Length: 267
Image 1 (cartoon, rainbow, N blue to C red):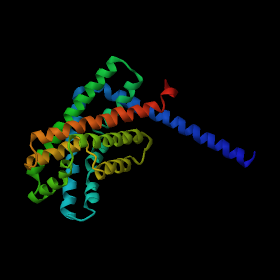
Image 2: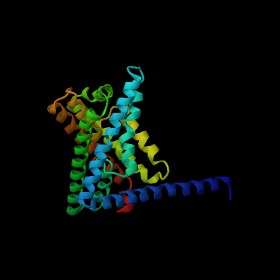
Image 3: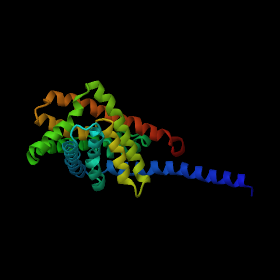
Image 4: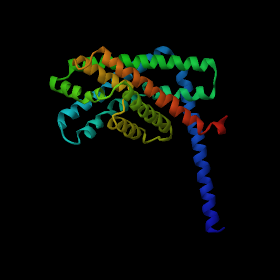
């Protein structure tokens, strides 16, 4: 056998492995999503509530870094290191996070287009979003009472980046956040040993890029409201467009692309 023929056979085998991996990855995520759709409402709610509370770790660590580095020219990149903290806790405990677990549940619905699947997806989204937001608001309010005044002031400063855009800007910037979190959800089943590293990299990109996430952003919004920087109107004007942007960026855009690359092979 010539060297050229041998290389061609190896290339074909590698290509076949890659093709199978994509289909297998889709099937694994879709099966996980199917299980999420069928979980009891109470289990989803408690998991989502805990995830919302855990997201307070991101704002807490961002504030601690803000306090340490001050106004250095590279402070924004350093502060963004704290952003993944809540996401890492959620990933380690396998809690329910809107835009991550809710995305995996979209994949089985794209394949099994039945009204019952759509109804179960709506139930999952509603419960997880409600639990996440309640937990995020609760921890945002509690942080002002359990931290030192100078640390809370630093958290307010670290959270103030979300005040720089209008509603349209928040919607547009929330699209890549949803997409990146969706990309993370897609990649994790294929990374048996590097999951936490992948979570850190993706969520650091979200934080460093200033792309708002609905749950982390709700903690930041609550911190700003407790500090008197924002009122309820400003908070809602931030949360609603970010929610829509994250959902479209993650569920609609990413899930559509993920399904599109394999649908002819699995249908």
